[in-house]
Image (cartoon, rainbow, N blue to C red; front, side):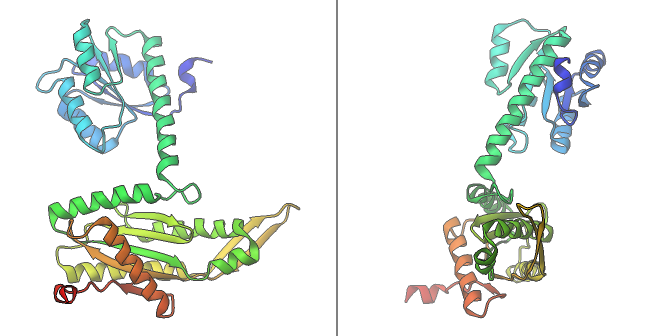
Length: 325
């Protein structure tokens, strides 16, 4: 088995070179085992990266208008593309140029004309490293059971939404959810069945929000939803957040049909009803701290619990006059 045959075909490479022959050579090397995108200028490369987010970039240094160094610099300055590994490919044989590329953030430097075996091995090595780093990142920032963002990643996402809100003056919303009838399921059927329900809850929550929003597991049977870019008007933002919250409340109130494999080979089927109490707070920019936003939504959630559960409550912020007294 050849080395490149072990690399998954799903890996997407971007080849950037203003010389068509160089592009064809690299497409011939990687085409059978990878999805290969191409760009013939720096501007085109940036556009392809923003749209496709390739797994690795093979980047020529010497190009007109925008050279490879500038392309690399811009990619590393963009949060969406900064982690994509870049390998410079150039005819230059200058240690200073190689050092410059590496200091800009490139992971490797290959001279032309390329040796097919060498370039294939180096690309494979960096793709494997990227996958390994991604797995570490998943473990560090995602909940192992539901695969939702955990509290670390929630803080990062909420910070990003707050920063965007500061720039565009649009409101965001944070929802704090707690399941109302979860403990009896664990007590009667065990934690494994409870885990199956939590996975289903996560699935339903994802289906209720947009891709730009965040659903996170806060801990136990508590979840947080962050809505971004609602509206510039507070009243309209509250209406939109309320619509999403009601959609979530209805989705979570639907019966859960859970199945668990038993040691004797049979399957345990359980139908369970489990509503949720939800607290919601709006925020705009950095007028409030991240800790306060979460605390306010949590307090509103407890108001929903006290009101009889299976409720939605918005946090009623105290007025400045009331705070001063």
